[in-house]
Every structure is written in structure tokens, then in C-alpha cells.
Image (tube, rainbow, N blue to C red; front, side, top):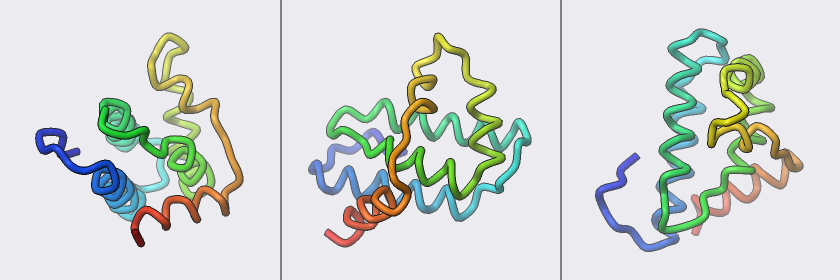
Length: 107
């Protein structure tokens, strides 16, 4: 995540979604510790963004469906006291999540 630059809210959302699609395209659907840690670091970075409300529900919904081994391994490794725990409790319609994420890339 490029957190050192200040972007307009729309540009920040585009950056978040672009980085998410890059991650999804490159990260394996694996429960390997290295893969899980990379995914959790990405989520921590998203939660640190203060300029906008990141599309975390959409991101988690897409990951849950497209990378189920990764999603469940990451969910099992997160403690209840972690700030990431709540992300694994959210869910929405997959098609709506994809549609919303695509809207950010087209604006």
C-alpha cells in the first residue's frame, strides 16, 4: 500500500481495488503460512487507510469465494481480539460485491 501519498477519495478507492485485484491474481489459493501472512498484511494495510472507507466487505466476499483455502486458513489464524477478526464475520452477495469493486475501476 502506498500510504505516504495523499490521494483524492476516488483515487484512493481505485488504488485499493487495483491492489486487491493484483493480490487476488497473484496470491495462491493456499493455506501456506507465508500466503496467509501476505494476505493478512494486505488487510492490515487496508484497515490503516483513513482517507476513505475501504470496500472491505466486498473484498472479503470475493476472497471467500475465489480463494476459499486462503480465506479459511486466514480466518483460523486470526484471534478474536484482533482488529482483523471482524472482517471474517462480514458477508454480502458475491455478484453485488464484484459489481461494486468493478465500479471503482471504471470511474
